[in-house]
Image 1: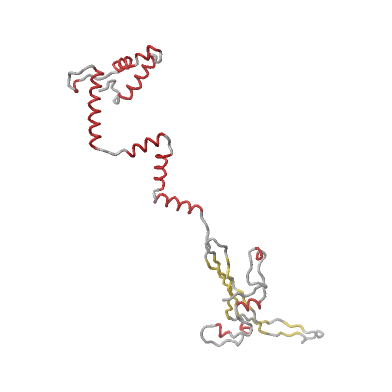
Image 2: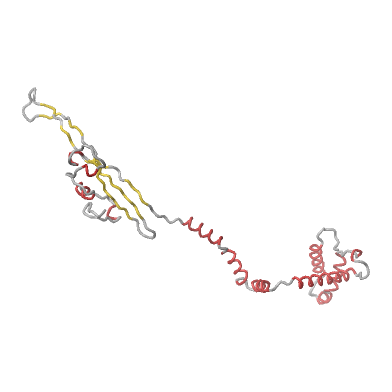
Length: 261
């Protein structure tokens, strides 16, 4: 439909309608595109005997309110008025008092038919948009997890934001893996470890299964000779050597048997 005036205006702002919007019946009829002399037959489906005018039959005004709110725009409400013919007449049977001096027959009853206009409650429909921060954050986190963004953040922090530690990570990540080189290095480390253990227990002849175990006394004796120069210069004390032996031996004695090997 087209715009029509109600209360003297076709559009009302929110601050203007705080106290309510009021208008006349003629404005409502104009918005409904009818008059009191309109034929009800043109507003009804089918053919049925009805009075020739709305004023003699009666009608009901039904307002329809459609609320729309486009994204990122203000909310608007469109009101459409519809006139629905229906019988709204009543019979008035009140006693009518005569203006002449009171006599036995001065009062009488007069019946007449009165017509009116009914007003129904507005029918409201439409759609509104509401921004929900909780749903937005939840959706953002879900998208970030699906795209593996946390993995890239952790990778960037480990590689470039931790100073010298990041440099170690970068060098390790850039090192090419060679299984043959790893195998040779492992065999060489095993051979060096065997020779070192034989030197600690001073046994170069017996089989590896016949070697004596390394105890705390032997480890203390070895460390004392290694740090002999530091002990003589006063940089290390005898108590510090003993504490070093306790820490190292405790870490190497996995089964708490008091022996290593």
